[in-house]
Image (tube, rainbow, N blue to C red):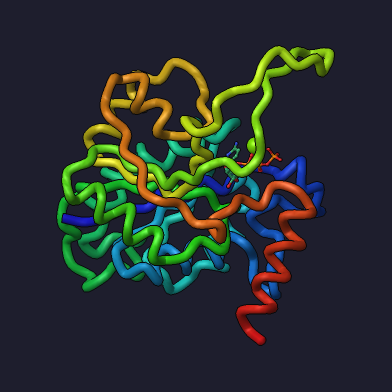
Length: 244
Ligand code: CTP
Ligand code: MG
């Protein structure tokens, strides 16, 4: 049985405002996408990665990731569509693993065993510890069909209207901020996407809509998503500390 990681990387990064799409922004001299993919492979629990890149960056992404067990294809108009494009490719890619061109770098070069677990991981979380990925896969393999890394909230949370007026304070003890990688049994994720009627900000939300249970494991501060220039600066600082 094998684990495939789907990496949605097709966003443009409007909030970051860089000259290139966010996944291609350099972080300590290495594109964010490369750091994210290498982090997944470093976990040693991921057999293959499918990257959904912006349509005009597919070639660039392929050269950046050459030599790794990675397939790059064009993503879609929103994150849900990008993940959907990658999921559609799973069957194709693993069938091709028997010597097909797309299978370059396939572990062992032979027929890949059947996919049982699929991770979905944002390209925009380049500092995610490989241990977190391993913990998510372990939780799926222990019998949870859907697993998300979750962190408690530090700030008080208010409900506000469009004018900025507060309408109440939400009990934060029952709230969690969830991260990626999110892990799923392949069957459950496939059914969740087949049933999805609108875009969602995470994949577990689609599984919840099916009525399937979603389990949490402790998230990690380093798995934060690079969204704004401040996040990028934080990531640069953390990397510098790591290498000094
Ligand atoms: N993503 C994607 N396809 C899209 C939109 C987003 O694959 N059409 C990916 C992004 O590349 C990112 C992840 O989904 O890795 C999380 O999205 P987000 O942080 O919102 O990235 P962007 O959409 O690129 O950023 P922004 O919303 O600021 O434009
Ligand atoms: Mg976005």
